[in-house]
Length: 584
Ligand SMILES: *[C@@H]1O[C@H](CO)[C@@H](O)[C@H](O)[C@H]1NC(C)=O
Ligand SMILES: *[C@@H]1O[C@H](CO)[C@@H](O)[C@H](O)[C@H]1NC(C)=O
Image (cartoon, rainbow, N blue to C red; front, side, top):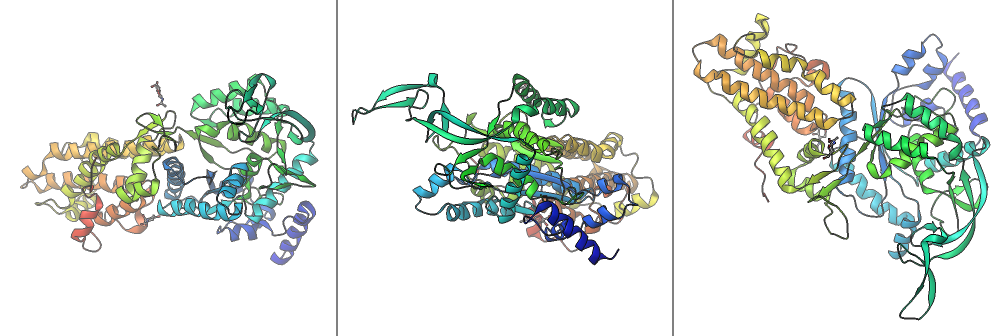
């Protein structure tokens, strides 16, 4: 079959299935997304085993799409950096990886904020969405797509998703009556409201007991999703995939909550209350619930709706979806339920992380302790912030943020730890690093002796130790393991004292070779965390750019480094881990 006829066939298939929604074959869409993978190959070369085509699925990691009703804060940066670190780690291992992020732009809060700013919701979103994209750029996040829920392909994907749910009988219409509070966007039960008196006007009104905001009796039509029907399938999924939600404590909370029971979910709002959103297909009076709209973004980015057999070409199912702990219910219950309703595979894992606090208090606009991530990066540098957030950031628990904490970690790990080690080894008088590397790798003794056995064991294991933590979705522990290796190497250098054995060339070479190997391996493994600083470090060590992959992080695999390829300027030395300008 020629490529043209295959393409025609696929297009025919797609059109039959997708109607007017999508007409591009998925290989073309994959190419448009910057990916080389061709789904046609997957579909039509039957000789390939399934396993082979599964292995070809790119690693796919997502962040939530951020709600642009206010400016980015440090928590957004944290999620982005976690995602980027996982993606870059995969690439270090030579695998193809995709990272998607973006902004979630529909909903009543945006509609109201735009009205307040006397602008259209779209224009309002354009501005703030841009600041989130700037954040990703500034933090060197290697994202493949920055999606906006106002993008036309997303709108189509959501409407198609809705139609499929409807076709399968998961959507029904029902009338909802009750006390509705516009400003709280909530229906309150009779027991939660009370009569109040406005002291200024003397008017009485019904209000929420909790918030004091006015409620009105409202009767409206909603579309509902049969969430309750998926309870057993969800529970089965959790039991069969015990690592579905990381960490395990949150997995347990979710299981408990689903076991307690699930109510059906209202998934539309009347247009007269919420107009800023995607219309329900075939019902112009209703707008699709923002969470349904938002969650679908993760498959829009993976090319949904797919032609048969094309799910994996752009990464679905996602390998890891990273979220903050406040949106667990939406991602760990609603999202897999929506997908299961259409027999689409749920994501492999959901990594839920803790929040950042300041002096152990929640960061909030009203307290005025929200950290601006742009200012933080301007002050400490991009890679230093990436380093700090991953190292100190909480997965299971919240973590406390503070400038003094950044400075402390920086000094301990980077300045006095790694920076000091590089400087002692590479600028030390009395030995040649290149000479030591050459001698030891050629003698094929790989530096046994000179008291370093313990360090050898640690360095041999380091790539696996680090990889294990990454697989367990704990980049902070991986980074900590790298820093422990730095401290061990510094300690080794201190104990071995090559400077006191200047007459024993063999001894000095072994000691220096061992330290240089340690720096080379740590430098390679640090790249996903601090891309720029790690590259600078490897340049200083004279490691070829083509030899900086995970497989190169094994002891004794590179006998050619040790001499910077181009002379390292004083400024480059100084800029690796300079003293921080201001400390408080
Ligand atoms: C979270 O904090 C609790 C109490 O301080 C502690 O017992 C637990 O080990 C912490 N969990 C993690 C994952 O750090
Ligand atoms: C971003 O990362 C790349 C490696 O992917 C690195 O070469 C570059 O220097 C980094 N840029 C910044 C501004 O840190």
